[in-house]
Image 1 (cartoon, helix red, strand yellow):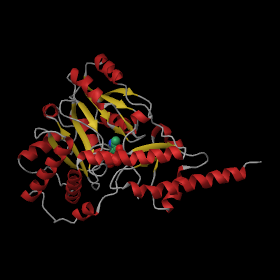
Image 2 (tube, protein in one colour):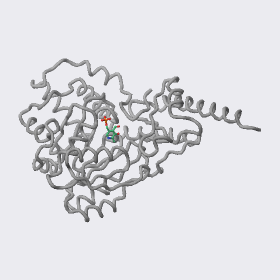
Image 3 (cartoon, helix red, strand yellow):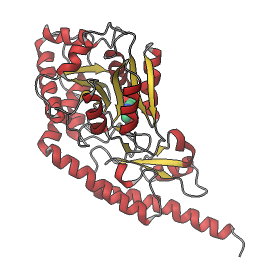
Image 4 (cartoon, protein in one colour):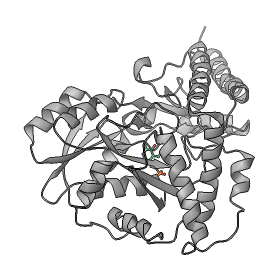
Amino acid sequence: MLLNPGPAVTSDRVHRAIAGPDLCHREPEYTDLFDRVRRKLLVVGGVGDDWAVVLIAGSGTAAMEAMTGGFVRPGRRLLVCQNGIYGERIATIARRLGIEVAPVTAAHTEPIEPAAVAAALDAHPAIDAVAVIHHETTTGLLNPVHEIGAIADARGVPVLVDAISSFGAEELPLPGTGLDVIAGTSNKCLHGLPGVAFLLVSPRAQARAAEVPPRSLYFDIPNYLRAQERRTVPFTPAVPAIYALEAALDELLDQGIDRRRAHYRERMAYLDREFARLGLEPVVAPRDRSGSVRSLPLPADVGFEELHDAVKRDGYVVYAGLGQAAATSFRVCALGNLEIGALEGFIASLERVLVARRAGREAASPR
Ligand SMILES: Cc1ncc(COP(=O)(O)O)c(C=O)c1O
């Protein structure tokens, strides 16, 4: 059972979908598939048909790179909110693309301070867009994207949101919030398979993209939009992964978006209760925690590999810590097609590791 932050455990329905027919992406069958997936992504995003959808064959970082390079005009700056490795990745991408970065930072366990974003926007009039990670998967922290959206919107600056590990699971109202571009991927909270990255782009951001000379061939967003007008695509799409994404979106819409979110919350509440019982306190404060990822301190004397290997022998994959707490933490991620009951076995496995280690310590300590 995968308890890493994606790829997520997926259903049989999603797995079976990849066996759909071979098809040529220059034929109307592909355009029909794209139209259906586009409409379903817009429903999940809660936005109208005036938002554009760009599907890119690639991992989540492809969506980050397309978003980072696509909306900042030459000679202007990108304000990048950095409180984890994904915010830092956006800054790295921007610099490699020759975009000047205005960083606003916070510790990896703290949300970005909206007032710091306001101050940076007021101090640097050349800022052309704000980039922020909704769910910093580094530690399982939610950033206050809506407060940041309101601040940027009041100054006419679009906000680019990496919602790669939150789209579909966390509340993310879009219309009228100042959030203009959403980067997502198929294989996290949407429960699809890896291979499709996507952007949702507001009308205002579509206009902005048209003013930005392309910094890349593959990630030239207006090129994707022009191709859509001709009912085609510029490059070969990952058709089997798009089949799986459509099945995953159907599953989500059949379940209901609110019920999916409630399921995430219930599952995490179960895990939080069990972590508290085992004496494992997440590194992020309760008010800032996401509904799917916890970064937990490694128990005394237990290295990550030992913990990982022990629970893996029982069938569970946990993930290493990341960023500033990498050496002292591990992560448990509950996303994907996982029932709460299935997590009980994992908690029992984790408890065995902790109990065995405690017994070893007690036996080794002098009386
Ligand atoms: C918030 C966030 N952004 C971007 C990425 C990068 O995605 P990928 O590893 O699919 O390129 C991840 C991956 O976990 C993520 O959690």
